[in-house]
Length: 107
Image (cartoon, rainbow, N blue to C red; front, side, top):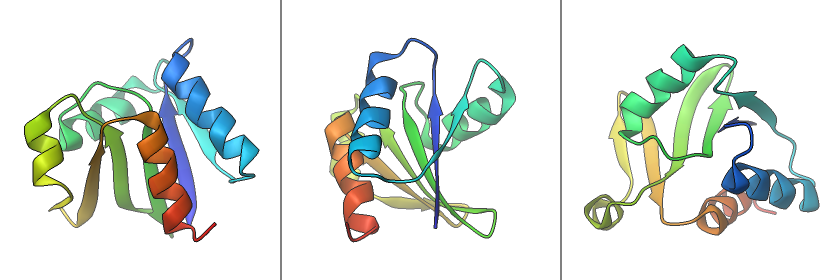
């Protein structure tokens, strides 16, 4: 499984998740939205957020899961859901995203 982090330059939360993944020796690719805004806009529209970082789990080039930050209590209560065969996983914190990925990778 491949991990891709969508991030913004200078974003403290983005730096935090990179540090956590580095500490855990999780391999990931990073894509800065300033370099490819249309890709980020597409993912934002799926999960209906502009909060970063967004972590994508991929297999064979296909998106399987999008793990993202949300400010919406309603979205958190609704939990995971499928959107066009992609599992979307809302979270309330960067730590929550990191722990979700750690558990998915059985680290």
